Structure formats: C-alpha cells, structure tokens
Length: 218
Ligand SMILES: Nc1ncnc2c1ncn2[C@@H]1O[C@H](COP(=O)(O)OP(=O)(O)OP(=O)(O)O)[C@@H](O)[C@H]1O
Image 1 (cartoon, rainbow, N blue to C red):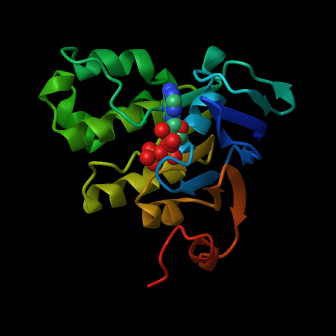
Image 2 (cartoon, protein in one colour):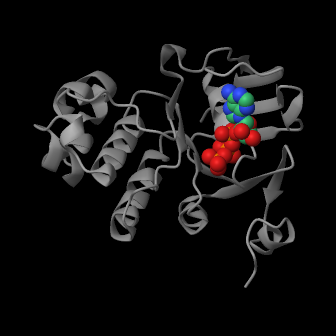
Image 3 (tube, rainbow, N blue to C red):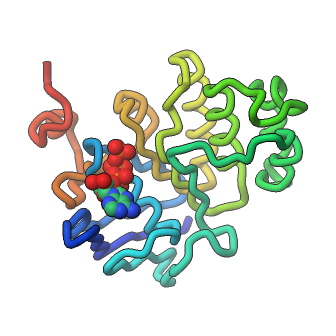
C-alpha cells in the first residue's frame, strides 16, 4: 500500500502566516480526518497537496517520490469546497469523463446516480449535486482522494449512506477528508489530525479536541 506524506508546508498570505509546521501522512487503506476552525487553513492545505496552490515551502511525496503537481497522472483527486461540475451538461456525460472505468459498475449502482444520470447538473438539488460530485471523485482513478466538506448540504440519512461508500473506497485508496460536521468525520476516519494555529496536532482522544478549543466539551 502506498503512502502520501505532506511535510514542511509553509504558507503565508500578505505576510500573515497560515501554515507553518505541518506534517500529514495517509496510507492507502485509511481515512484521515482533518479538523480545524474556520479559516485555519484546511482548504489551503488540501490545495497545496493537490498542487493548485503554491506554498512558500512544501514537501509532498508518495512512497518517497516528490510530487509537485498531485493532479497529474491520476495520483491525487480533490473535491473542492464549492461545486465544481459545470452547469448545463448531463450527469452521465460528466461521469464518463471523471469515473474510473473499473469503478463504473459500483458508481452507476449508486441511487444518487440512478436518479440523476439523465439530468443536467443545474437541474439537481444542492444536496444531490454535492453527493454526486463527491461520488465521482471517490470513484475516479486517483490513488489518493482529498475531500473538502463533502457533508455540506447533505441530509443526515444521506450522510449515513455516504460513509460506508467512503470506507469501501478506502480499502484501495488513501482518503483525507475535512468537514465541519466533525461527528461525521470522527465516524468515518481511522485517524484524526487537528489544524491548530498553523500546526498539525495528531489527535488520539476526543478530549484533546476540547483542550485545543475546537469543541466546547458541553
Ligand atoms: N487567496 C487568498 N488570499 C489571501 N488570503 C487567503 C486566500 N485564500 C485563503 N486566504 C486566507 O487564508 C486562511 C485560510 O483559509 P482556508 O480557506 O484554507 O481555511 P479553512 O480552514 O478551509 O476555512 P473554512 O473552514 O472556513 O472553509 C483564511 O484566513 C483565509 O482568509
């Protein structure tokens, strides 16, 4: 199983330090949950690993091989925080571009695809669209999958249907997932990392999330 490592990432915006002491690793076969307050740099970190945001400094590797642009050669796929599928195009057409032919059967069996395959993206509800674009990324060819807020706009029952699909995908791939619905992240993840004051903290006990002021502990 391959291992993705993100190390020594530093990011500044207008002289303001956002990320400074970052170490993340994710093996194929596991789901790594990434938590952190609004604006702490979670999306920026995923974009740096994916290769679409330039950091002041970064070291991203898969099995020791330096990865400059993760999106090249189907190494890393990224679900952005905001919708990415273009409006006006039929779902089936987009799925044929994004989904790995080897995962086509599993993907097309998903209820969300069956309900939407002959519709255009702009005919879907916000929740349907979010599920669909997450599922397309999960069933893409990439070795590692980065999911930025996949549970946003998703109803609780659909989130519960979602989690086993993410777990099943993690048998073959490595997944890094972030969302403010932290209970869903705790549920679906093997390990948790908290981004706190620009640094990654490996979380081994839920109480540490209270200590770092991420949840209130009430
Ligand atoms: N292009 C940019 N130019 C300047 N500042 C930026 C830019 N992109 C992000 N930032 C700032 O960097 C910080 C980290 O943003 P980022 O979107 O990575 O945080 P986040 O943890 O994903 O937040 P949220 O949970 O609210 O989505 C924020 O303070 C944000 O305002």
